[in-house]
Amino acid sequence: MKPAEVSTPSDREVLVKRCFDAPVNLVWQAYTDPALMRCWLTAMPGWTMPVCEMTTQVGGKYRWRWRDSDTGQEFGFMGEMLEVALHAKIVHTQHYDPGDCDFGSMGGEPSIITVTFNETNGITHVTTSIKYASRADRDAAMSTGMTEGMEMSYQALDGVLAG
Image (tube, rainbow, N blue to C red; front, side, top):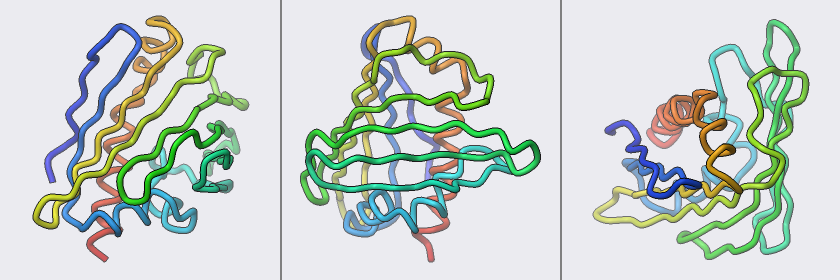
């Protein structure tokens, strides 16, 4: 599939659009099943995901944590589900925990992530909107290589979905 399209529709937002060659129920499962998430949400080469906890219901919590296999350094994200519509939409908060990594700040305020899923002829279109508390937070997150990391993970997801 084509690489993700990234734009900044406002001074606090990042919009990422990507298509996957799979029906929406499989893409949804890959986005919500911790065992599958560990297969594709891998951050960078040489990193593992030792913590992947996820409760996909409104008010449910999640926690993701990555570890560099060489140095043992870790970072992660955590948040709460605000809206869940099966096979269609997930809205959640996201707090960045820098752990002992030096990737810079993504601000102290949580961001709001909205992920929508739409299937057309067996192709699932996933749109991810990330709204930050400020332009400085958005720009700091973008400067970490966040969207390049997302595309690496999406390419791994292509492989998971292909079986």
